[in-house]
Image (tube, rainbow, N blue to C red; front, top):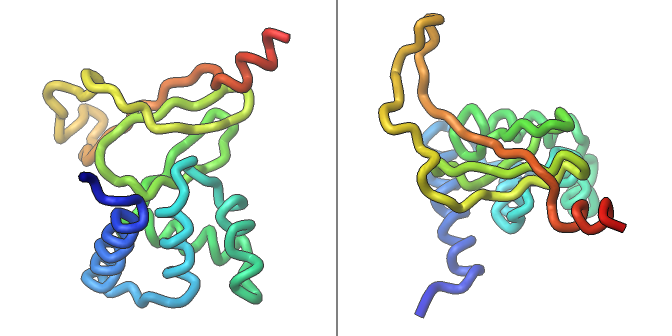
Length: 152
């Protein structure tokens, strides 16, 4: 019998809180609320969506604060920043290597759970002088909703 989503989310939150403490990041009320919101979502939310999730429960919260916290989380390795064709940054609490699919019409982003897209030998250095640490692949297409709306 598998663990329920609430138990899994609690374990993820605990791991993320441990990472914050290990990296010297204080666990403010705003940071904790944002961690919880990110972990509960699976739709790779934008800064605006996360702000909308939290603005009612955190008085005085601004979009700028949410953006700054997210950028801090990215630098700490707690979340991954995903670029989308619409140029809106989206965020993912799943930091394991995985790939994404992005809808060209509405901007929806989803995990792409397939194997075979990992590079066989990941070069640590690039001829340009970049030192490479990781990579991600984003495929683009049309989600089901946009496919149906364009067929009508």
